[in-house]
Length: 393
Image (cartoon, rainbow, N blue to C red):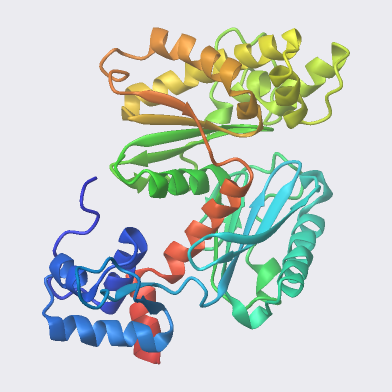
């Protein structure tokens, strides 16, 4: 694996904490080697982190005959963050430790058509219950990470997508949480959050795409190690790219033959219900396909072909090493990815697909809230934020 932090003379305490988060437990000697600091400089910065409670010492390293070496690591028990993954038909909320591990979670069966007051109000109430039921208080909360379907202005935390769902245009998401939890809040598009989490899990891969095929369809794009958001946060909004052979399907945005109109869960569910199958939500389609229902398998594979048509363009443009497929439809990964591969390898260039791997994501369910936890932890534990915190202490 490549080095995640090269020698950085003058690295601050915040940068040392970032190093510990990326690399795991390290000795003071390790830190000196990786940052170029002297032993005295390392001690001064580490003492700041220890005094703040951000870092703890563990005397559990392998001994070479003397005293076991003391290793330093992030104090994952030094507080909690709240993570919420909003979806079109359900929302998952969790309390996570400062290492991003979910400690308690709950699924809310809410519908975006209920509006932001109902959905976000329910999320706030469930956060409070999870904290109380698991022995935490509001004072333990260090931050909140929230992912939502649609484009977000990450500076203000407001939605900027056209209001496909009535009432969800220009929603100030942070305002719903700050009254109860006066802590930093990071809000981003749900697929962007998944892309950042996949990048964290695969640090050796600088170029990757994740496509979420669920009630809607979107993509998260990592290029040269960085997330691509675009000028107004709309990068990856592939659900409204027109596809061929769409049959004149009318999209919720008012367009014709958008990818979502022919291949998303909201488009497939009524067709399957009309065929007499017991389908009320996107996950039902995947469950039927996994059980071998021929209609469900056929429809999901055809949806994969349409998604593959759009994905081929992304692959030609960005040349990723990994393409992950996530979302409720991806629970039936075999037919979905088979349909995608069929078209991708027809339409994308041989050069762009030479190193390409197409895989089902492992971020379903708990992974979605882990992605939200990663977002807020990257914010509150950024070197600048940590250095400002220590300076104010």
